[in-house]
Length: 383
Image (cartoon, rainbow, N blue to C red; front, side, top):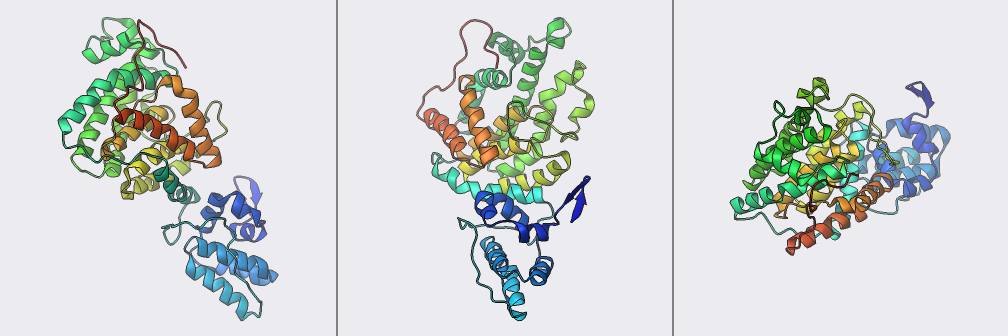
């Protein structure tokens, strides 16, 4: 037994010896995450030998081999046989995946993000449109991004519950937003959110320009996303609504998502997970995978106290540009479908509904259909 945060728990080697065979089929990501924490067989083999656990030894050898830990699997089988135990190796997982894992993960949270990415990517490729390729007309692409700004701002802010109108969004963009002359511009939560969205959008456009110049999109967003976040909340800091320290970086407190069963990673885990997330984003060469998993895993980690949805959609659209897909707006009218697909991916690790949801919007956009509109008149819906 071991004690963690006041709880008496099984040490990891003992836990893997004690779990039932169903654990590997019912919770494959958890199982692979635990297995990836081992760099050699010594700790787990000691417990297998002490207990004479021949069936469990065969199951764990097969499990380690499933994730590419051939040496550990061989050492378990050879160690048991050297002690005159008969071992028949069996793979307890339902699936065999092509995984590329480091020799040993330093954090289970980092391992989980790496495994989720590799386990989900095939389903994304199967359920998303083929990428058109980076556009030759960069200026034309950026012009279309400018054209969609008002619609994007209206729907993205409305998804998060802000009451914004096309008129407010236009005032912010045209420069008539004036907190010195109009008190509401400097104090009203919705006006500040609209102003921050505009400033962040301009920063994201610069990232899109870098991606269209053939810079690695994962590296671009790794370098730039902190700047997007600061722009997103700078007006609220100036108005005294958000503390300046909140712009320092990733969150240092627990967060919970309203109406969701998913609990985002604890603060210390965020710092383990985010470098791996950006590593996967930088290394993966398939544009559809970067689009879907870039958005999903960012909000799964939930690295900031607020603004994660807007940041995730910004990141998604930078990845869209890298693949030549059009900037894609998620309509507020589809909010329930959007959130349900994210929930399914977060709680059941089923990425297919989310890949299909985003893929449908992309297909419609690629065919020239307008998938989101600005409302007529003033005042938009609140969500």
